[in-house]
Image (cartoon, rainbow, N blue to C red; front, side, top):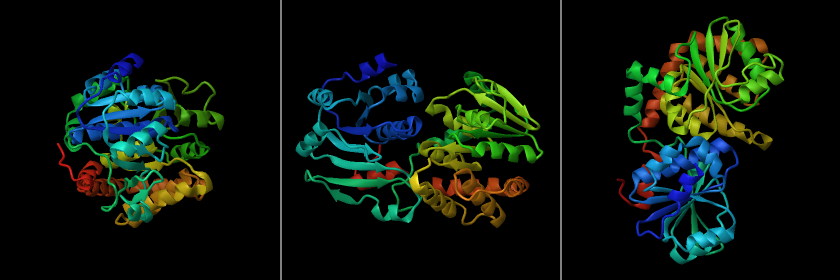
Length: 401
């Protein structure tokens, strides 16, 4: 992996227009996931080369296979973002960028800022996704910086006036092909060592550590109907062991299975970002975390909950409420009530009693087809919106490929 990155980063000064994207890794999956997908979209949509500067190359290696990096090495180059001296040496070998994107408000290195004063590229601060109304008001607004350059704020979101969402042009055709061909589904399961069969509904769980998981497991057990939970990562299993509701040696390894009444839990293997869509397409429902996985669940169009990253003073609940109130505005009242209440309960909002939590889940199960239809219709409406790259093209006034 490191040899591959070294090779794709060693190109000399080029004449093609370049976009520089800067990523600092805070949450290993979240920051890298959005940063890499952004780079892929920029390279696919515009006649530019993309240079990704990232401070944790190893984190990128967990999400993106070396073969995938090699396949795009002519259009996407990976640079180790280290100290300013190293950055200065590298800059001396590179052509000026036409655009510089700092993701999530990371501070650009001083040598890059000095270079930008000379070549004056378009400067974007690619912010966290939100459905809050204030973000629409600030979308693409310039902020004059101390060095005399204007920095524009880009807020991805679900509103027509927002910065849009990252979506591949061929997403729907890929999804439909996968769903319509069981042989592709079986081949995918075999490729990644996933169970070939499951009992009851299949839910994909990719979430953070939380004390709530013990209570949600109790809810699923009390529902008295078969359900299979594919656990991506170790966090949910760790939470259940810490609460003492599963054995200390349970679900420790990838491939481990643990059953409680009609609930079957399986630790599934880690898959690269490029394969995450397929996991969602296989599932009946999902609980996803972070920003990139949330957007992929939106595109998949299945019932899901968003286990959002918790922030101080419960700021995350405002973002969560803003999304769900817009997404569910036309949903059946009983489905909307249950999703909003369970979402708040999962994310540290209003704590539901055991009986109410179970009743709300049973309501969703009894109205399952209504939930499926509502989620699918909402997803279809978002697919009709222009993507983030299309909106960037209009803002930048440059044709897409």
